[in-house]
Amino acid sequence: MATVAETLLALNEILQDYDTEVKSAGSRVTTLHVRTKERSEAREEIKAAFAKKGIEVEQAKVPGSTFEGLKVSESSSTYLNIVFKPKAGGGSGAGAAVTKMAESAQAVYAAVAFGLGRKITHSDITPDNVNANKDKFDIDENIEKILNELPDDWIESSVLGANELWEKFKGIKNGIVFHRGSKTVDHIENQFKRIKKIEGIRIDINKWSPADIYVTTPKYDPDCLENEKSIKGLNQCMNERINPSDPKMFGVSLKKMSRTSNLKVLNYDKKDSLEKEFTNFTMNYDSIDTYLNFKDGTKIQFRSFGGANALTGWQGEVKGQKANQGKISLGPVNLLLKMHGVPQIDTTYAKKIKSDPAGIIKYVTDGLDKYSTGYTVEKFAKLQLDKTKKNHFDSWLYSKVHCIAIIDAINGIKNSEKQKQVCEDFYLYANSRSSLSAPYWKLE
Image (cartoon, rainbow, N blue to C red; front, side, top):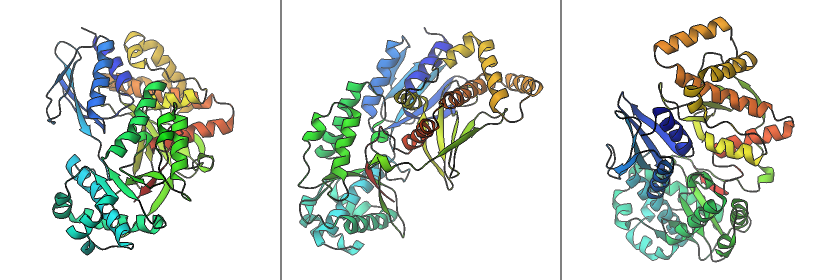
């Protein structure tokens, strides 16, 4: 059996590219949720990755899900339950059933608006109107459920969304089709999966395109997508098809709307995408985090979200003026650093904290002395003593060593424009708008 340190290291490496959340951490059992649109595929990938590293893993029923998860042995008496949850869609945080219904409803409501050739109200969503325009939508939900079970808040949102789409794209007179869960959607997403394997990139499909529905026109030709061999080429193909002046096919990301609606294109024409200008990092000596700061006040908080005793879960979370936004984990951080020719962050810190604690502490204290506010040798000694008594020091050290490493990486970029671009890419990736991401319309 692998040691606890080896298991923690494997967990960090394997799960860093997934949207994860620690739901509970007891003395014997830790439960981790992985959210993805591709539950079966993700489970097989993660299971194979653990097996390759010699980590004992069992596919089994796990508490909190009827979909079988993974049970990973950390030691002879402790283990980790990995629960696979569907990616929440529509900005609702609702369950998969409501998400499927809401996204499908948006496709149906939009089809009715285009069929009637005008803005609609809920009174227009009748069985006759839906049936008359069934050639304008292709969905994987039961129409009766949409007509009879759609919650009131999603009825309002779907009407707003349909009218916003009509106003923007009413120039498409004939042949428009709104897709959710159709063969067309599968085909588009399968091209990404194919190229992802070719390039060896581990990136969740929602970070490539957060689209909840796709829209096609008679001009849509999938050959371009099928012929591409790189993410860059695929995104250029998607860029050409979303062209607002001559749209052929495009994805739409949905958020629940109330009273007002807005539709904007994102990640299109990346030459004009610069929005965030990096200024600096800030960090207190005793905190678990560091902040990457942008000129407009937006921040990315980097820290471990794995829990008080865990050596995993380090990632960045965008802090906007109104609410938390997207996240970027260590894997994508390193991928973007690599793409820009910048040395990557060490992915073996969890192991080194166990094998070479003195070396890690030396690196962290040197970094605190250079970058942090309030650091003194005496204060750090007290912090180490206090956290060690609570068994929290290793997890604090794990988070902090990564924070200092990312500051070192960015500060090591001597070209200021390149430095700003790397930091902006962190932000854009977290919000599904990086150079790895496809263009899409956001309806909110």
